[in-house]
Length: 520
Image 1: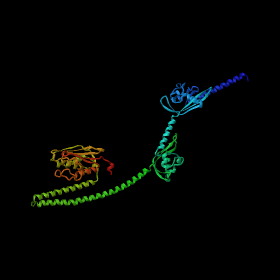
Image 2: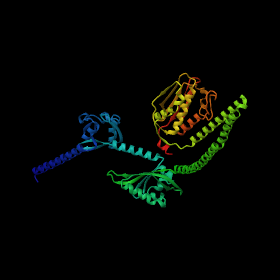
Image 3: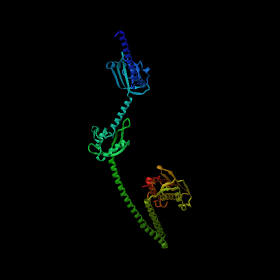
Image 4: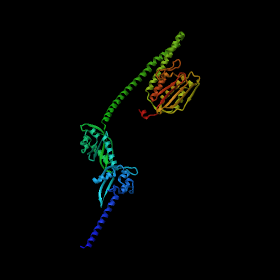
């Protein structure tokens, strides 16, 4: 072959090499531009940046022009990295530099974590450094979340158990070890059915099938075996575990030991059963007592009233038949006997009324108090017609009460007001209402009469308790006791305010309607 042929062959060979090199460079460039990792190309001698790919530009927020010509350490995101000279020395010695978790701050202030790897390689007739920068922020956040979740699982007081769809245990936390007695090494890889009593085996499969259908299981109470053969009560909450495509691949269970709670509930049930029995017994006893009280009342009515009527009758006969032969002193004695017998009859009648009030069944309904007050005042017309009384009656709200018993309350309070203002030149009696606590209605009767010493206000509502003598004001001392008995039976309260010779105000409250209580 001549020299010309050899030269031509050499020329063709160089062209092919150049074409291949150009194609390789173009291929590399496309990879460089399209890479999903940041790439920096550095001069091996100076460590200065020759090029940066688009991904790194977007990741850091600095343009290619801003990075070109600088060392890695001169870029603000890498300001805490070792010096350029130290990095070059490490590269020359080891051929690579690696940072597995390098924190960076981007131009716009975002904090990211990257994996930074530098390698030296030959590019034609010179050496270059290629730095690959991978954003691992999402991976780090996932690791942190995973570690946080693992910490929660391990520190939980409830057993947290993972299972596959074949009931094989895949995870077992420390609380599960404490509650069931098995170590994780003893349970992971074995079936959860070893904890399930034979009579409840179907229960576990039913839970699994419900989860496969997309249902949830919450606070399902059942029983499970422990390693030492005991049986404990547990509350199970179970949910399905899904992969990235949404396919159910396992089960997560939270088991809470409720043995103490169940034991407490059993004790409470026994106590309630005993209490209910005692209530039945006490109710029976009260019924017997009420029947005995009814019999006693009948006895009082029949056995005491007859002698009293006899005394009154025979005194009247003596006064009629022997009046001429008796001295004035003897006639006075007969008058005292007659008055005392009549007062005893009144006391017997009042006691019987007080007894009946305490035993009468309440017949509650909405009561028009305005109307009831008007009816009550009509009963006092004959008694008050000759007296100058200034009545002040305010509008009164309806209440939920027994109308007949409420009438007795008003009669007693108005009667007292009329009686204790008897010595006033002009009596003033006021009837009104106010709103009390918890929605209760407060009704008051106020007068400008004799009043009372407030030190003895606590005695006013007692049976036979009187703060004035019979010579001053007549009465048996039963009226206010009846008032308090009726008001208390309605769930309310009664009280009074007053001062000697400055009048008195008597209050009573009626609670709002309560269907739950009224139904009892």
